[in-house]
Length: 195
Image 1 (cartoon, rainbow, N blue to C red):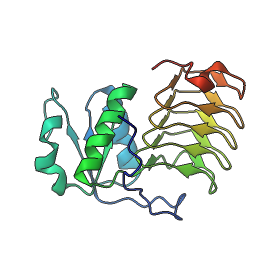
Image 2: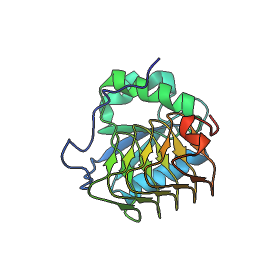
Image 3: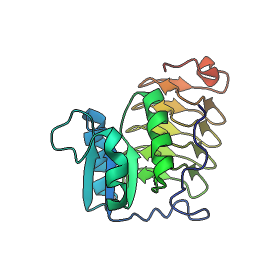
């Protein structure tokens, strides 16, 4: 299965860097990472944040129950850290035709020329610099740096304090461990990180 390329982009093309957010968000996955994403969503201005999860008490539905609640939400996102499962959950959102906006912390710096894909998460203190590209569903953790002209592939995770140097790339479904520096000649560019 390929990573979906047609998840609705939010915000609309041409408005990257002017992140406007709808009212309600359903987060798929309610574990520890889910709590981080819920705080991020509230910081982005969502007033209603709920969870879909197969085991969490208080979740509005299980993951298989998404079709029954999808119409109640303005947007959905994924908060699962397992990168392969993340990819599969984004594919489910795509079938529901619900917007999947990027969530960018007001305490992160994102260059106006950077591209942030649908469902991507940019956490507090992160920097996404000039002409950098962050793919669909990628996670840029707290304090991570994506330098100019770098590319982070779909559903990749650049962990806390990691640096993706100028013109370097991170393959899809790859985790860059905390504190790591990815250079253009690094083996992580070919998927050498953890999956």
